[in-house]
Length: 288
Image 1: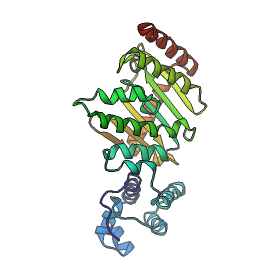
Image 2 (image 1 turned 120 degrees about the vertical axis):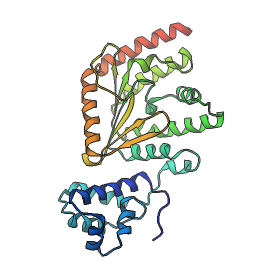
Image 3 (image 1 turned 180 degrees about the horizontal axis):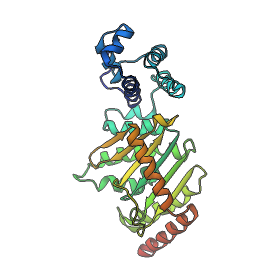
Image 4 (image 1 turned 180 degrees about the vertical axis):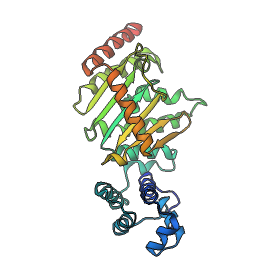
């Protein structure tokens, strides 16, 4: 079987979970290879996502690693079963950086999404004009065709939450509500769109006010993506230059704890709608 030159995010995650399973059993790669009757290099390739495995081999590895977490095994088997199903984002491969595609892929497979943003409205809730303005303000400046491409991609990503397919909780800092990327008119339209989205049954929008001074958040913007089971949860954080993914249990536990603290500090959904409406009215007075 030819090695994959560019494994997908789900393929790499499957490999990472196989490695975690082996390490928790205290087995080295060579030990597992001997038990399976394969070359040690093959184990490395499986754990990097560069070669696939069958569901039968997954169950063999789980047994050899003394893994009795049946929900995890079933969830990994589902990844294997779905490995050949391409998503809409594949049409952008070779046109956008890999991390754009990976974010769309992991959002599509998530069972629940939560975001916290301080600098801008969450991408999954941005209007076309607002998203275009955000991309256009980058440094160095992107050419217009790149701005249009990224904006179109972001709009397609939004289907996962606007369709009601995936429950979505957005925690938005007051700073993001007031930050203008293309003047008060675009911002007011964006705030109006937020109010409309907050009425959707599958979308929760909560505001964190400036006067909340005890929030222990070192990350300005992050997304928490729930897998079919907690062991397959993932956190994503923007670094400004790239997108970083965290799936180690210690990391996901930290992000879950952060979300609980943010949830306790945020306004209620109704209070948030009223607060966003008040800022919208201020913006409208600036261009009305």
